[in-house]
Image 1 (cartoon, rainbow, N blue to C red):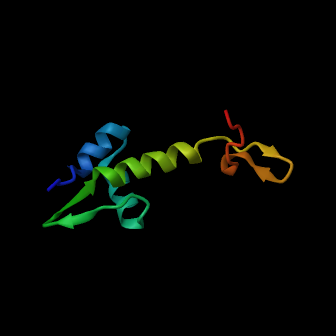
Image 2: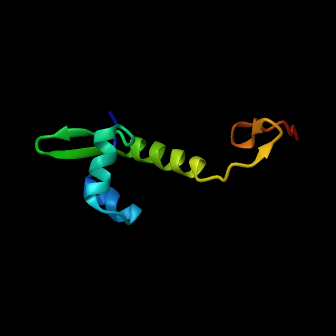
Amino acid sequence: MHLEQMLSVSDVANVLNCSIYTIRRRLKSGELKGFHDGGSWKIPKSSYDEYIQKRMVSSIPYISSGTEDIRNRKNDNKE
């Protein structure tokens, strides 16, 4: 049985170089997935990884190719 690693609000805030209040807001809004364990938030490592991946994709500048958003374009190169 494999238990997933859990991160605290302060763990995530330290890694992202932001305040614990920012992380709590993102948890409450659902932008970052986590749950209450007693009186504190716990963030599964997989939820943190998903959040980071979404942030990386959303930070790619919008560059239009006609009407197509290249952030959503599939890789058509078959090598």
